[in-house]
Image 1 (spheres, helix red, strand yellow):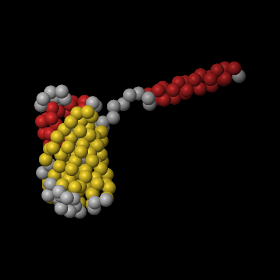
Image 2: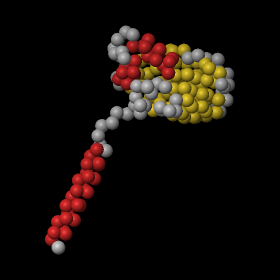
Image 3: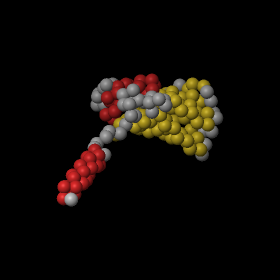
Image 4: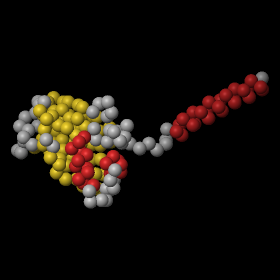
Length: 164
């Protein structure tokens, strides 16, 4: 009887040890890779204005340039132009880079596209940081004439389209 009790206690300790291990593993540090883009339609100028927020070290790693160097903004501009495409009502739109700014751990990138009188469909291809970070998620929030839409992008889902 005592032997059976000892065997049961040993199994219980073994199982509780495994459970403790998994609980402790769940608290390990995991880097989160994401970007957030806000799209606003400006009716007066018929313009879509984009504001993208990215982690400074992530974009720096992707473009392989230190954010404190003079060429950082030019490389960010080139990177965004190569990794973000906009189609309004099926027609491709040219993106004009406005400016970028670094604020601590965040890089803000501002760009726009003009000549947008009315939107029935908005299609975006967003591959920002997807090739550098396999678990990257890019969110795009769109505000158009009182309507709000959200898109998400990740590897395997680089293109998304919404209708208004």
